[in-house]
Length: 193
Image (tube, rainbow, N blue to C red):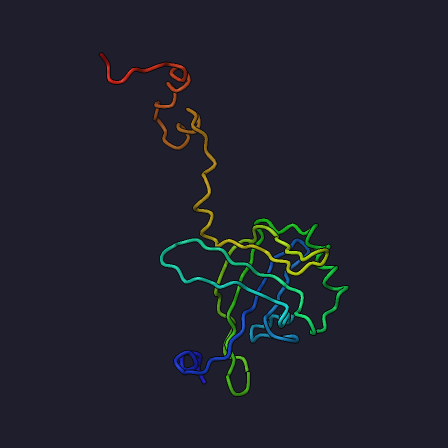
C-alpha cells in the first residue's frame, strides 16, 4: 500500500527514529525493540519502552519550539540492565551535547505485516541544548536531552555591539554612532524651557 493511502486509512503503524550527532559519532535509535534497518540503509537500535520523545508541535511559519528526547528507567517489575543505565547516567555528566544536531524521523509500516513503507520522513530538525537528569533519591530515573528547533536561533541576540565600528561595517557611511561616547554623560532636559 502506498504511503498516501496509509495516511488516509484509519490504520497507521509508525515509529519515531532519532538521529543524534555526538562527538564520538552518530547514534541512531528508534522507539521499537531490536535493530531496524531502514530502506535507505541506516541502522537504528531499539530503545522500546525505555525511550521517550516529547510531543512535536506543528507550528505556523518559522516558530521555534522545544523537543525532549531521553531514556527512563523501566517501571517496577520490568527487567532492565542496571549497569547499562548507571553507565548512561555517568556518561551524561561528561557528554558534550550543546549545539549538536538532532533529527527526529517518522517511519511508516504496513499495518498488517509491519513491512517498511518508504524512507523515514523528517519530523523535527534541531540542535541539542543541554541534558537534564531527574533523580529519585540516589537512583536516576530519567536522562533527557533538551533540543531546540533550528528556528530558535532567531530568538538569540545578534553578535553586534553598539559602536561606531560595528555601525560603519553594517551601514557604510553612517556616522550616527560616532557621537555616542561624547554624549554618554550629557544630561538633557526635555522639553527645553
